[in-house]
Image 1 (cartoon, rainbow, N blue to C red):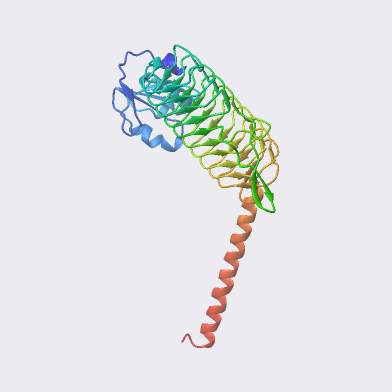
Image 2 (image 1 turned 120 degrees about the horizontal axis):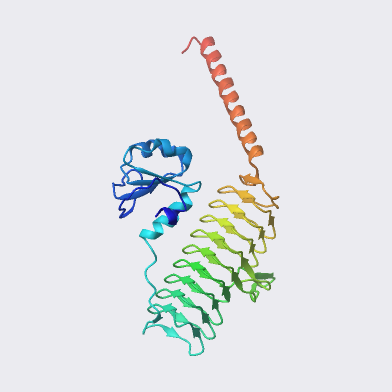
Length: 336
């Protein structure tokens, strides 16, 4: 376990059978601490071993092994996977699956019950296609991809180790139409969706195909559940998009941008490298690299909280004046 965690621990033989939180772990389980807020739970834990930063090792109770690492949460991810690995791959095509005769499916891939594989699709080695999933015509999946139950992927190219969670929709037509005197006229969406290596798309999220250019999600990016990505959007490498956020068409996020839950971005923006957008922010203008913005309309964090403080002072001062006026009125009327 210590090797998997890339950590250090005193030499000791210890049989561990599972993982658990600090509060409930027993003598044969391993836990972790990544936030000093939970030091009290660490001091009271009955875990057999705890993954934690060296600065917190002195808080480990007697009988518990301190497994120290500069990155406890990353170590926890590796150790938890030892106890809870992915189910073994079951290569082959389920008899109830519907597979086009000209689809190419690697012999090591797994195609689940009632899945649909379209014409010309290519399913790479060790891919897993879940029950009721749909892989459309011409879609290409690189090695070790996972398409969850009831997910659909069309007009898309996926790299290696891409995980599309259950219910996600990849490659449907984007929200594009012309406004005419007779009403709305749909504009054909002709681009694709490109997901680079190690991208994850959360459950029930949607990524529209491009209108003419491709919609592009950079390598290692993580999309939470219920995220909407509009047509022609381009995400750089290592972006994080949290639940219920929406990005309108043709907006560009450079590498390592973080977008908080329920944030909304209008179209045709550029968000600079390593910018961070707060939860529920409404972004209507470009954001420079490294900036932190919050609020709606979004603005730099310091400016936002200065305005909040000013509003609170105004409210407090008005309340004082109101109380003073009421007290003076009571004095003049004798308090009746």
